Image 1 (cartoon, rainbow, N blue to C red):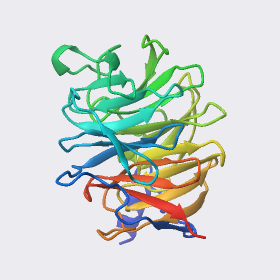
Image 2: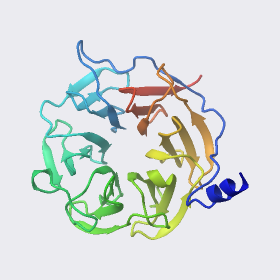
Image 3: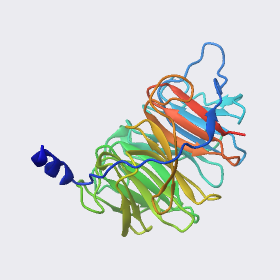
Image 4: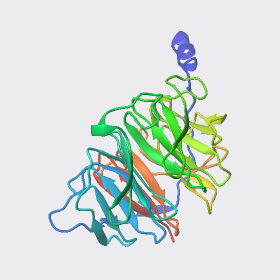
Length: 302
């Protein structure tokens, strides 16, 4: 037993899982009002726009759907050249960016679904860990104030790729491993107001922190298994989907857990593979779930 304990402690990234007080939120049951006969598939991504409308990216027959904050469906894109949904983000100009994990491409579109930019290989071919315009199972995207963006790439490639606002390759960093600056499934990225980039290093069970040139700044190894990350400027905090422990954690920028929401299950308020997360201007939390085929909305208790 003592030998097993010593071996466990020697594993890279091993740390005792931390928790925190319950977040004072409750779910809004049956929030998303889909038309009769419509269903979500696996819900992979969610984000809100400047008007607090909610964009859902799912693996059903209608992959991009927009709702208002009360759950009324506003539109669903009729034509989406997509193989498998993963991340979705709305940029400062209101454009919708979708990450296709199976076709290895990034699409920038208008809110009405007109494609403005595609980054990826011809015919959905993969790129390697040094490709400038090719990916291998990319996951999500984050935007700097000047429009530069960072792509997490991904399930097979193990790097972060930086592009200019016009889609020109600038640099990348990372390789497979457990050392600082190395990754094992790069699953999400988020930028804070100080310009620090937080990377969900999923299978290494840690969040790594970098400057925008890829210089390693720190890591959190005891906050759970990061699947989704979302930064809220008004609070200067990050919300994280812990997909293994089926919970949402709220963290300050020092990695301290301020609160925890959710546990495993199928009922409203429970979680099963929480994959991506966003927060609107009122503080309402939206969580996209893979196994429950839904996006849940949580609002603050009164």
